[in-house]
Length: 211
Image (cartoon, rainbow, N blue to C red; front, side, top):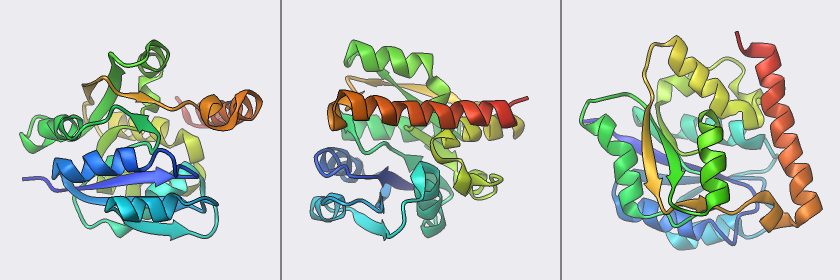
């Protein structure tokens, strides 16, 4: 039966991280590892208090770098990635992400929001290849070319790698799950700037790498 490590990359998510760590632990899916990407708040301490193992990075590597750090620390065949700012997440959601793999139906799953806030559900469906909720073979990420430099484009690159490897993606509906937006975390203007940086990194990848 496949084994899993749950990896949660996090940057300044002290307000949200426990609500992701707790259901991850309750799911029994596997080891839960938070990678604090040079956070300047209490993300690492809150994650530890919630029961997770924590890796603290002293230099900000971006989302891809944090995910890769977690992958290198894992010893399991599959990695389950979760964003650190999810709301409404339950242990059952994680089990649903894992089940198609444990049953041998597929090698990878991607979670899509459904039935939560309309805005995040719509965004999830429109940008499904960008989803941070996914299970992939560990080897896929470790062998991904220049993965540490991809930052927010990492999910798109993983989707492309799956297609190149001929591995079908099984989409799993995460009923009632939503996400704290960048604007809600940082305020309208700083959040919009952060969102623009994310889009820029993803579209740069599209221009440079997509066929």
